[in-house]
Image (cartoon, rainbow, N blue to C red):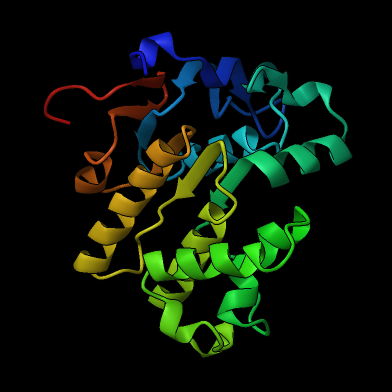
Length: 233
Protein backbone atom coordinates (compact mmCIF):
# COMPACT_ATOMS: atom_id res chain seq x y z
CA UNK A 1 0.00 0.00 0.00
CA UNK A 2 1.30 3.45 -0.87
CA UNK A 3 1.47 6.50 1.33
CA UNK A 4 -1.67 8.34 2.43
CA UNK A 5 -1.01 11.08 -0.10
CA UNK A 6 -0.95 8.48 -2.90
CA UNK A 7 -4.27 6.96 -1.90
CA UNK A 8 -7.60 8.21 -3.27
CA UNK A 9 -9.68 10.67 -1.28
CA UNK A 10 -12.56 8.97 0.50
CA UNK A 11 -13.97 12.37 1.51
CA UNK A 12 -13.43 15.74 -0.16
CA UNK A 13 -14.74 19.10 1.01
CA UNK A 14 -14.67 21.92 -1.52
CA UNK A 15 -15.12 25.46 -0.12
CA UNK A 16 -17.86 24.35 2.27
CA UNK A 17 -19.93 27.08 3.96
CA UNK A 18 -22.92 27.01 6.28
CA UNK A 19 -25.10 29.64 7.97
CA UNK A 20 -28.42 29.28 9.76
CA UNK A 21 -29.97 32.51 8.46
CA UNK A 22 -29.03 35.24 5.95
CA UNK A 23 -28.79 37.93 8.64
CA UNK A 24 -26.35 35.99 10.84
CA UNK A 25 -22.64 35.34 10.34
CA UNK A 26 -21.65 32.05 8.76
CA UNK A 27 -20.93 29.22 11.16
CA UNK A 28 -17.97 28.45 8.93
CA UNK A 29 -17.09 29.17 5.33
CA UNK A 30 -14.63 28.15 2.67
CA UNK A 31 -13.62 24.86 4.29
CA UNK A 32 -11.67 22.54 1.99
CA UNK A 33 -10.25 19.18 2.99
CA UNK A 34 -9.17 15.85 1.55
CA UNK A 35 -9.48 12.81 3.78
CA UNK A 36 -7.68 9.91 2.24
CA UNK A 37 -8.06 6.16 2.42
CA UNK A 38 -6.85 4.85 5.78
CA UNK A 39 -6.68 8.32 7.34
CA UNK A 40 -8.12 9.06 10.76
CA UNK A 41 -8.60 12.75 11.57
CA UNK A 42 -9.44 14.50 14.85
CA UNK A 43 -11.30 17.83 14.86
CA UNK A 44 -11.24 19.99 17.98
CA UNK A 45 -12.86 23.34 18.76
CA UNK A 46 -14.80 25.32 21.32
CA UNK A 47 -18.47 24.58 21.94
CA UNK A 48 -20.71 26.29 19.38
CA UNK A 49 -18.18 26.59 16.55
CA UNK A 50 -20.10 24.12 14.39
CA UNK A 51 -18.38 20.76 14.88
CA UNK A 52 -21.62 18.77 14.99
CA UNK A 53 -23.03 20.86 12.13
CA UNK A 54 -19.97 19.95 10.08
CA UNK A 55 -20.52 16.24 10.73
CA UNK A 56 -24.17 16.53 9.69
CA UNK A 57 -23.06 18.04 6.38
CA UNK A 58 -20.52 15.28 5.83
CA UNK A 59 -23.16 12.62 6.45
CA UNK A 60 -25.68 14.25 4.12
CA UNK A 61 -28.05 14.98 7.01
CA UNK A 62 -27.92 18.70 6.15
CA UNK A 63 -27.05 20.74 3.06
CA UNK A 64 -24.31 23.39 2.84
CA UNK A 65 -25.14 26.89 1.67
CA UNK A 66 -22.23 26.69 -0.74
CA UNK A 67 -19.49 24.25 -1.62
CA UNK A 68 -19.59 20.50 -2.06
CA UNK A 69 -19.16 17.31 -0.06
CA UNK A 70 -17.90 14.38 -2.13
CA UNK A 71 -17.86 10.84 -0.74
CA UNK A 72 -15.88 8.52 -3.00
CA UNK A 73 -16.25 11.21 -5.70
CA UNK A 74 -20.06 11.27 -5.34
CA UNK A 75 -21.38 14.81 -4.81
CA UNK A 76 -23.96 14.55 -2.03
CA UNK A 77 -25.73 17.73 -3.12
CA UNK A 78 -26.40 16.20 -6.55
CA UNK A 79 -28.41 13.33 -5.03
CA UNK A 80 -32.07 13.30 -4.05
CA UNK A 81 -33.10 12.41 -0.51
CA UNK A 82 -33.57 8.71 -1.23
CA UNK A 83 -30.19 8.38 -2.92
CA UNK A 84 -28.42 10.20 -0.06
CA UNK A 85 -30.14 7.90 2.45
CA UNK A 86 -29.01 4.80 0.55
CA UNK A 87 -25.43 6.09 0.27
CA UNK A 88 -25.31 6.98 3.97
CA UNK A 89 -26.76 3.59 4.93
CA UNK A 90 -24.11 1.77 2.93
CA UNK A 91 -21.02 3.91 3.37
CA UNK A 92 -21.26 5.99 6.57
CA UNK A 93 -21.05 5.01 10.22
CA UNK A 94 -22.17 7.76 12.62
CA UNK A 95 -21.73 7.85 16.40
CA UNK A 96 -24.09 10.61 17.57
CA UNK A 97 -23.71 12.45 20.86
CA UNK A 98 -27.32 11.49 21.64
CA UNK A 99 -26.62 7.84 20.65
CA UNK A 100 -30.12 7.26 19.11
CA UNK A 101 -30.23 3.71 20.44
CA UNK A 102 -33.74 2.17 20.39
CA UNK A 103 -34.63 1.37 24.01
CA UNK A 104 -37.12 -1.45 23.37
CA UNK A 105 -34.81 -3.45 21.14
CA UNK A 106 -32.14 -5.74 22.52
CA UNK A 107 -28.46 -4.83 22.39
CA UNK A 108 -27.98 -7.34 19.55
CA UNK A 109 -30.95 -5.99 17.58
CA UNK A 110 -29.72 -2.40 17.90
CA UNK A 111 -26.27 -3.25 16.60
CA UNK A 112 -27.66 -5.40 13.79
CA UNK A 113 -29.86 -2.59 12.41
CA UNK A 114 -27.39 -1.37 9.72
CA UNK A 115 -26.98 -4.95 8.49
CA UNK A 116 -30.76 -5.44 8.43
CA UNK A 117 -31.16 -2.30 6.33
CA UNK A 118 -28.48 -3.51 3.91
CA UNK A 119 -30.21 -6.88 3.53
CA UNK A 120 -27.41 -8.93 5.10
CA UNK A 121 -28.91 -12.37 5.78
CA UNK A 122 -28.37 -14.81 8.61
CA UNK A 123 -26.04 -16.30 9.75
CA UNK A 124 -23.66 -13.59 8.50
CA UNK A 125 -25.68 -10.85 10.23
CA UNK A 126 -25.43 -12.57 13.62
CA UNK A 127 -21.76 -13.40 13.15
CA UNK A 128 -20.81 -9.80 12.41
CA UNK A 129 -23.06 -8.39 15.12
CA UNK A 130 -21.71 -10.64 17.86
CA UNK A 131 -18.11 -10.08 16.75
CA UNK A 132 -18.59 -6.32 17.04
CA UNK A 133 -20.30 -6.65 20.41
CA UNK A 134 -17.32 -8.66 21.61
CA UNK A 135 -14.98 -5.96 20.34
CA UNK A 136 -16.71 -3.32 22.51
CA UNK A 137 -17.07 -5.64 25.52
CA UNK A 138 -20.85 -5.99 25.25
CA UNK A 139 -21.28 -9.61 24.09
CA UNK A 140 -22.49 -10.85 27.52
CA UNK A 141 -25.34 -8.31 27.37
CA UNK A 142 -26.45 -9.11 23.81
CA UNK A 143 -29.96 -10.15 24.84
CA UNK A 144 -30.56 -7.32 27.30
CA UNK A 145 -32.86 -4.46 26.32
CA UNK A 146 -31.08 -1.18 25.65
CA UNK A 147 -33.34 0.61 28.16
CA UNK A 148 -31.82 -1.51 30.95
CA UNK A 149 -28.26 -0.34 30.37
CA UNK A 150 -26.07 2.42 31.78
CA UNK A 151 -25.07 5.47 29.76
CA UNK A 152 -21.61 4.06 29.13
CA UNK A 153 -23.04 0.75 27.94
CA UNK A 154 -25.46 2.53 25.60
CA UNK A 155 -22.53 4.49 24.19
CA UNK A 156 -20.71 1.24 23.41
CA UNK A 157 -23.81 -0.03 21.58
CA UNK A 158 -23.85 3.14 19.47
CA UNK A 159 -20.18 2.64 18.59
CA UNK A 160 -20.68 -1.02 17.69
CA UNK A 161 -23.67 -0.11 15.49
CA UNK A 162 -21.62 2.55 13.66
CA UNK A 163 -18.86 0.03 12.88
CA UNK A 164 -20.72 -3.22 12.20
CA UNK A 165 -21.27 -2.62 8.46
CA UNK A 166 -17.62 -1.64 7.89
CA UNK A 167 -18.32 1.87 6.63
CA UNK A 168 -16.11 3.76 4.21
CA UNK A 169 -16.49 6.89 6.37
CA UNK A 170 -16.72 6.84 10.16
CA UNK A 171 -17.99 10.00 11.88
CA UNK A 172 -17.71 10.00 15.68
CA UNK A 173 -19.10 12.90 17.71
CA UNK A 174 -17.54 12.83 21.22
CA UNK A 175 -17.70 9.01 21.28
CA UNK A 176 -16.08 8.53 24.71
CA UNK A 177 -17.87 11.18 26.77
CA UNK A 178 -19.66 8.70 29.07
CA UNK A 179 -16.88 6.14 29.35
CA UNK A 180 -14.36 5.57 32.11
CA UNK A 181 -10.70 6.16 31.15
CA UNK A 182 -9.94 2.49 30.46
CA UNK A 183 -13.05 1.98 28.32
CA UNK A 184 -12.40 5.27 26.53
CA UNK A 185 -8.87 4.21 25.63
CA UNK A 186 -10.12 0.85 24.36
CA UNK A 187 -12.85 2.54 22.32
CA UNK A 188 -10.45 5.04 20.73
CA UNK A 189 -8.10 2.21 19.80
CA UNK A 190 -11.02 0.28 18.29
CA UNK A 191 -12.19 3.25 16.21
CA UNK A 192 -8.71 3.80 14.82
CA UNK A 193 -8.16 0.10 14.12
CA UNK A 194 -11.50 -0.23 12.31
CA UNK A 195 -10.78 2.75 10.06
CA UNK A 196 -7.43 1.20 9.10
CA UNK A 197 -8.82 -2.34 8.71
CA UNK A 198 -11.69 -1.21 6.48
CA UNK A 199 -9.40 0.93 4.29
CA UNK A 200 -11.85 3.76 4.86
CA UNK A 201 -11.48 7.10 6.62
CA UNK A 202 -12.62 8.53 9.92
CA UNK A 203 -13.29 11.83 11.67
CA UNK A 204 -13.29 12.10 15.45
CA UNK A 205 -14.91 15.17 17.02
CA UNK A 206 -13.55 15.68 20.53
CA UNK A 207 -12.73 18.22 23.24
CA UNK A 208 -10.04 15.92 24.60
CA UNK A 209 -6.47 16.50 23.49
CA UNK A 210 -5.57 12.97 24.64
CA UNK A 211 -8.35 11.52 22.47
CA UNK A 212 -7.33 13.70 19.52
CA UNK A 213 -3.76 12.45 19.73
CA UNK A 214 -4.92 8.94 18.78
CA UNK A 215 -5.64 10.30 15.27
CA UNK A 216 -3.21 10.68 12.37
CA UNK A 217 -3.59 14.45 12.46
CA UNK A 218 -5.49 17.09 14.42
CA UNK A 219 -7.36 20.08 13.00
CA UNK A 220 -8.99 22.97 14.85
CA UNK A 221 -12.38 24.37 13.80
CA UNK A 222 -12.81 28.05 14.69
CA UNK A 223 -13.70 31.41 13.14
CA UNK A 224 -10.73 31.03 10.80
CA UNK A 225 -12.12 27.77 9.43
CA UNK A 226 -10.51 24.36 9.66
CA UNK A 227 -6.78 24.64 10.31
CA UNK A 228 -3.92 22.59 11.74
CA UNK A 229 -3.64 22.69 15.51
CA UNK A 230 -1.04 25.30 16.50
CA UNK A 231 1.82 24.40 18.88
CA UNK A 232 0.75 24.84 22.49
CA UNK A 233 -3.00 24.78 21.82
